[in-house]
Image (spheres, rainbow, N blue to C red):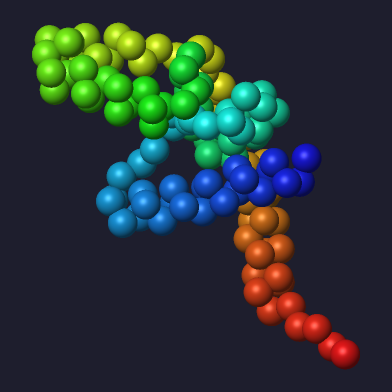
Amino acid sequence: MPTLESIAYQTRDVLEAMQKDADTRLSSLRVDGGAVANNFLMQFQSDILGAYVERPIIRESTALGAALLAGLAVGFWQDLDEVKEKMRIEKTFTPGIETTERNYKYNGWKKAVSRAKDWEEHT
């Protein structure tokens, strides 16, 4: 489980930096790729972010996005609204922990990362 949890923590690290740069707040995250099949990871991600995590029916959205944009470009679909209909959500994960617990866990992660940065091998 710690390996899966580290994915969620690293995602939060990146998203916090992005939110700071963009001066905005995340309310939901749409995910894709092979790891999204893991329900534990998706729930933990939602818990650690304090945001909804949306898993689409089609989990490889890079290929889907390319196909949808190509179809839009050649007129297969009329507009973006029609394209959006193709991007349905299979499951939405809702945060299940309180802010205090979320911050406690995340601060533990940051502390561990800080310690790892100062790691030295003594021979």
